[in-house]
Amino acid sequence: MILVLNSGSSSVKYQLIDLDGPARVVVGGKVERIGEHGSPVPDHEAALRIVAHEVSLDSPELTAIGHRVVHGGPLFTGPVLITDDVVKHIAEAIPLAPLHNPANLAGIEITRRLRPDLPQVAVFDTAFHSTIPPAARTYAIDREIAERDGVRRYGFHGTSTAYVSRLAAELVGRPGTANAIVLHLGNGASASAVSAGRCVDTSMGMTPLEGLVMGTRSGDIDPAVIFVLIRSGMSPDEVEAMLYRNSGLQGLCGDNDMRTVIARVEAGDPDAVLAYDVYCHRLRKYIGAYCAVLGRVDVIAFTGGVGENSPLVRQNVLSGLQPLGIRLDPVRNTFASGSRLISAADSAVAVAVIPTDEELEIALETSAVVARTKPQ
Ligand SMILES: Nc1ncnc2c1ncn2[C@@H]1O[C@H](COP(=O)(O)OP(=O)(O)O)[C@@H](O)[C@H]1O
Ligand SMILES: CC(=O)OP(=O)(O)O
Ligand SMILES: [Mg+2]
Image (cartoon, rainbow, N blue to C red; front, side, top):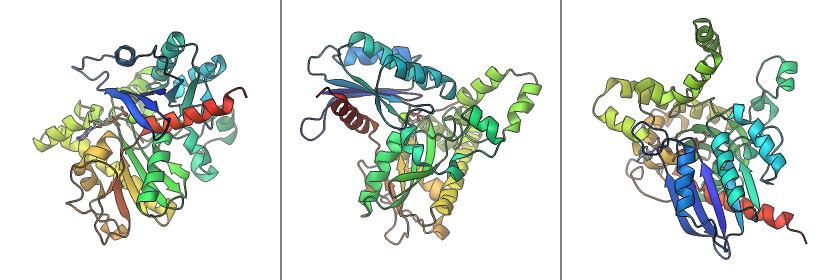
């Protein structure tokens, strides 16, 4: 049985998965709204204490522990067995994922301390994106400086994007060959273009700050804004904290949780309406961009807390894209569960909702790494 820990920026998800026979979740749960105002869970440490209480970490049936690690740095392009050296590299990437790698490391430290007898595996968000070609990976800045400091697009949400693009391709009857746009909309949010199972572009960059508007992160801004703010008296640390923690929906309307933002939109609150419109506009822009990157799009797949649960966001984001062959079916695009098509029968591009399962993907990769590294 494998324990999986998945720390996101606003949640810790955990599952005990039995992989003997068809995969079966024995225990699973989610601690969410971490750090939101009024939330009983102030930080990831507190969330991990709740998780440790819920799962029997001392169970003799546990065979391995798999950890989601958001930034793998330049070294890791696939999952690895966790050693002191691996922990050191994950720690070195903290400045490149300050909302995530510390939480991922906290989980690793707790489980290594409590179960030093078990193999532990790190599964990186960055791994699936290591195939992104140079034209999409390279920032147009001084090449020597970029190479010296490893400045390039890494991309994140890779475990989710790999899983969702695979299922979306199967759903439209093109397993392994489909061109897909995956929209992972959680508290963090990203768009990716995937062609025949390989990622060819993604909206997040060297850090999970670039791209779409997120719960508390700005996504794309003019980089010169940073210099304007520093020259007007903010320190680099203050600017960084603002862009990661007090921007996006939170910065625009004071709430990062899409459920609350939508409730305020429905009540006609103008700040929430602006935040929501900025969010949808950015997303629509990336969909157009990735249609151009892929040339032919077979399927657009929505996933993550917002993508899976908000018919309103899906409808608003895709409205006006009929000239690109994208048409939603308003009845299919309602609340429902499971992987499903929500496009109209005459839509040239299929649109799907695919609930992500990072935990299952991490369990499978963990089990494969453990099998590979077992002494014969
Ligand atoms: N029914 C819903 N309608 C709109 N948004 C929702 C709904 N359910 C969850 N969400 C949103 O999903 C986001 C969290 O997504 P999730 O993928 O769990 O986050 P994380 O990035 O922490 O992994 C929150 O903004 C939450 O408001
Ligand atoms: C990379 C990232 O932003 O992850 P999450 O959406 O889980 O915060
Ligand atoms: Mg997440």
